Image (cartoon, rainbow, N blue to C red):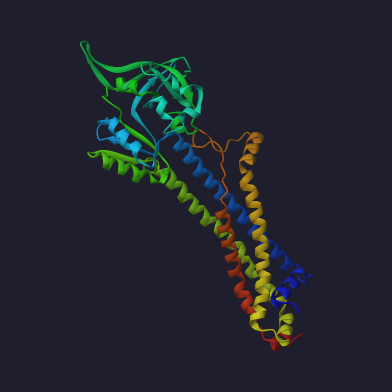
Length: 414
C-alpha cells in the first residue's frame, strides 16, 4: 500500500516521538552543524568571488588589457604600430602612452610616483580613468598646458589641490653651460582621480603625452596600450600584433603584470573551500553516531520488520532515508542562510562598522576598503552537492549495520 516502503517507514520514524531524547538532541546538533558549515562555506566563497571581481574591475579600470612596447625607452614608428593594432578584430581600442618614474614636490611634501603620459581624447578607448575623476577633467591635459592629474592620496600627501603647482623631477640630468642640472618642470594640478586602489591613488600621476615626451626628452611614446573584446585573449592578441610588426617588441598582458594578485585570490579560495568543507564533513559524519544509537534503539522494530518479510536492503534503505532527511534539511536551511548572508553581507558589515567604529579593511593596508560579496549559483550547487555526498556517506555504515540485524538475537530478551 505504501510505496516505496523504505521512505514511508523512515518518515514515520522521523515524525514519531522517540523514547530516547538524547538521540533527538544528537540529530539536532548534527543538523545544526551542517547548517553552520554550509552557511559559512557559501558566505566565504562569495566573499572570495567578490574580492576577485573587485580586483579585476579596479585593476582593469586603470590598466590596459595588453601593452606593446619597444625594447628601448621608446617605440619606433608607433603610428604604424597603432594602425596595425587597430586593424586587429579583437582590439576595441588602442592608444599610445609614456610611463616613467619621477619625483614630485608639492606645497609641503615630496613623493615619488609613476608618470603616465596619455592623449586625453584617446585614453577612454583603453581605460576608465576619465570616469574616476573626483575633481577637474581629464580633457584639461592639453598639449603644452603642462597640466597634471594626480591620484587622490598622492594629492593629499603632496598637500595640493586643483589649481596648485607641482614640481616634477625626471630621473635624467640636463647638461648646461653651468653644469649638470636635474631635469624638472612645474606642472599645474588640473584634476584628481580616485581609482579605489592604493597602488594607483597614491602612486600615479597623469600628464599629456607630448608633455611627457618633452620632460623625458623622448622622440616618441613608450608603447601602445590595448583594450580587447575578450580580456583573456590579451597575451595571444598582443603577440599576434607584435609578430605583424616585426622586429623586437616587448609584449605584456594584464594577467602577467598583476598575476600575483589573482593567483593569491585563487589559492585562498581553494584553501578556504577545503578548510570549510572539513567543517561540513565533520557535521555530516556526526550523523554516524546519531544513526548508530538509533539502530541500537530500534533493534526490536528491525527484527519485527525482518520477520514480516522486509529484506536487508529495505532495512538499510529505512535508515539511509532517516539520515539523509536530517542531512537534506540541514543543507536546505544552510543554503538559504548562506545565500541571504552572502547577498546582504556588504550592508551588514557597513552597519557593524558604523555602530562600532571598527574598520575591517583599512585602505592604507588593503587594496579594497570594503567587504565585497558576489554570489555564484554554480558555487552554491557544488557546495550543496558536496554536503549531500558527505551526508550520504555518513549514513551507509549505520544503515548497513541495521540491515545485518538477526531477528532471533534482537528479540531474545524482549
